[in-house]
Amino acid sequence: MAGTDSETAILAEGVTKSFGDVKALRGIDLAVRRGTVLGVLGPNGAGKTTAVRILTTLLRPDGGRARVDGHDVVREAAAVRRSIGLAGQSAAIQEELTGRENLEIIGRLYHLTWPQARARATELLEQFDLVDAADRAAKGFSGGMQRRLDLAASLVGNPAVLFLDEPTTGLDPRSRLSMWDVIRSLVAQGTTLLLTTQYLDEADELADEIVVIDRGLVIAAGSSEELKNRVGGDVLEFTVADQHQVAAALGAIAPLGEGEPHVEADTGRISIGVGSGGSEALVSGVRALDAAGVAARGLTLRRPSLDDVFLALTGHAAEETPEPAGRGRKRGRAPDGKASS
Amino acid sequence: MTAATALSTLHLDEPPLAQRARWAVSDTLTITRRNLMVWMRVPAYIAFTVIQPVMFVLMFRYVFGGAIPVQVHGGYVNFLMPGIIGQTAAFATFGTAIALATELRKGVIDRLRSMPMARSAVLAGRLVADTARMLVTILIVIGVGYAVGFRFQNGVAGAIGMVALATVFGLAICCIAAYTGLAIKDEESVQAFGMIWLFPITFLSSAFVPIKTMPGWLQAFANNQPVTYVIDTMRALALGGPIQANLLKSIACIAAILLIFAPLAVRAYKRAS
Ligand SMILES: Nc1ncnc2c1ncn2[C@@H]1O[C@H](COP(=O)(O)OP(=O)(O)OP(=O)(O)O)[C@@H](O)[C@H]1O
Ligand SMILES: [Mg+2]
Image 1 (cartoon, rainbow over the protein chains, first blue to last red):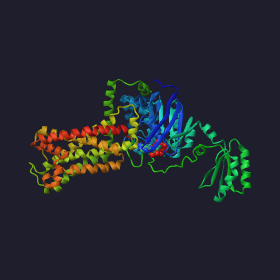
Image 2: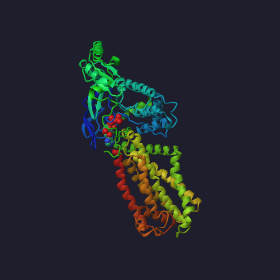
Image 3: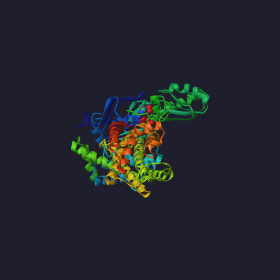
Image 4: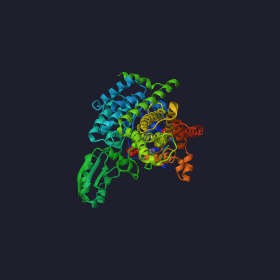
């Protein structure tokens, strides 16, 4: 029953979706090889959740087609559902019930017998380090524990393909690291994973391949290394404390760069890709700034981060939302609560 | 890893129809069980569903009852109880609407819809659990009624008929509530909307006072609306008296509500996001 290419676990071609006037997806292509991790990276409102909801059969695309584990997400939705696990953007657990009960009920809904469902729940509670909390109501769990329980619930059916929508958003740094460990161990067991995130370091850390989406379009795809090369190699960075000197500084360093320099207005930090110029670029940078009479602090040359990639690709930083932020943060629902189709 | 081995069967092809039918039933029972577990874990839910109608019984029996003239054998408490029970059934559906809206917001419905379970089970399980909860509440309210002087006047069959009608009526209202919960989505709006329509249709009916004590323009509404048909039928079942006309009207109204709102609720569930 595999699709055109049994090595491809997730395939999307030209997928579009609009909500009224909002074009959430404007033609997305994705391909994820079996056993690999795709990081879908994009700012608020980029269309990450919409893409996940289409791939997990929750939403019908307006156009294009998509296959998951060889099955068409529209025509063979039931088969897709037998292959996938989903942990959405908020923890979808029943807070009044205990961790164990949550997992047992999911197991029953996967048509396990009660003893099988109990055994599976116990296995997962151990795997996700929830044994101590297993028999307490999930209401009292910390955010990190609730996320882990939610992730465990998405794995009850042993899915071949797993979708995690912003698995670490809202977690404190320590819970985030422990979530990363859990995700890494899943991947080590061969699960194909599609993960969305707004955190560049998270995609860098967990994903084999990354696609960057912005306003419903894939604007770049490749390994984290390839994307970093797109910035134009190393990045020269410094801070100009005096607002009035920013223009002079930009003029001085522009000839050194391979791309457009970026200025962070409130801090006066300036960065520019300098290709493989290396330490020569650093030296020329110092000279040029000196000649222009600019007082620059903290001049450094560093490997590009995915933040730089985002800047180079979109002209705006990942965390700056270009559109007015007039929508509910949590589940990507329209602020007026209008019904969608 | 016994559980995991059993799971390998999940990834096979579409199961046969008979198997799917059996799963639809077992999935519905699983969801029912889950919903009843949640209900029993949260004292506030129990309080909301049980204490409120009990307070109504006591308040109308002792505070307003003396001022309300009725020609019913056994006095006002006998007139009141079928009305309170009808209202209890209708109000129990607040829980249905709010629970579905909450599950939608928390992504529980997304999770369930992404799983290979029966698509009908979430709504069916919700309706079964909420109907069971409603029945328990009705029986408690009848018990309280007995403690304050209520007596069935029309035999056991009449009493059972009254409870059955109230339950079926409540189930129909549950379908409306399920639809509003899934369509409106925001829990507070869902609750406010419930107030807006459930209070008028239950109070502007024969539930608490004889309609002929109302002003004429209100009588026109109160005499010709489903809650009055249902409560008059329940009263006839509980206390005796002519029944046929109201029973037929009740059945017609309940059937119409089910035919309209059950499909709407199913559609809202399928499209929920
Ligand atoms: N059900 C809906 N009804 C109307 N508009 C929607 C709906 N879901 C998403 N949108 C809109 O589609 C666009 C993409 O939303 P989506 O939730 O996919 O973004 P996202 O990348 O997941 O963002 P976030 O990081 O905030 O979760 C947004 O402009 C959003 O307002
Ligand atoms: Mg999202």
